[in-house]
Length: 158
Image (cartoon, rainbow, N blue to C red; front, side, top):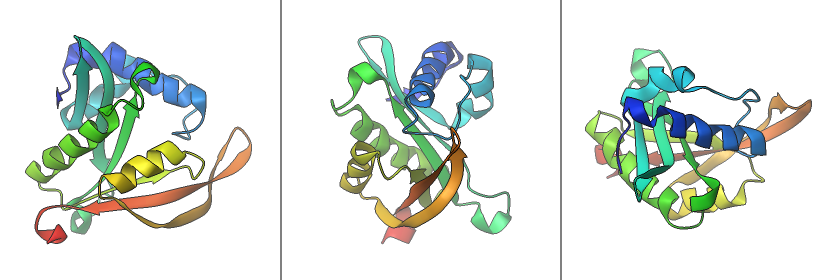
């Protein structure tokens, strides 16, 4: 686990594009390029195995309002070839440390209810289900729900 570097961008985009293609992890439908991802590089960590990027996670602002400055919305994606091998767990564990060091007191995300593997991973890493946003957005012309998850960090967790 380490902070993302510019040279990671192609692998990072490739992994994200797998998620877009599979339609189980994001509402995005158009493939992303390395350049598309660069604005988030300082808030991104990657998992590297045998010299190859096999996953990434990042934090974005939950809201531009100052009162929510300590709340981060996160994304996590693991390469198809590395799934179910512990990469996601290591990324989430490291992401919590990474976020807390940057002043976050909460991480939150939205996950499709059908993405049972991701929901199980979240729960096993200390995230709790907050609720379901019904018909949150359209994906390929079909309404999709999302499960909202959160994990408190630092003093907020104590």
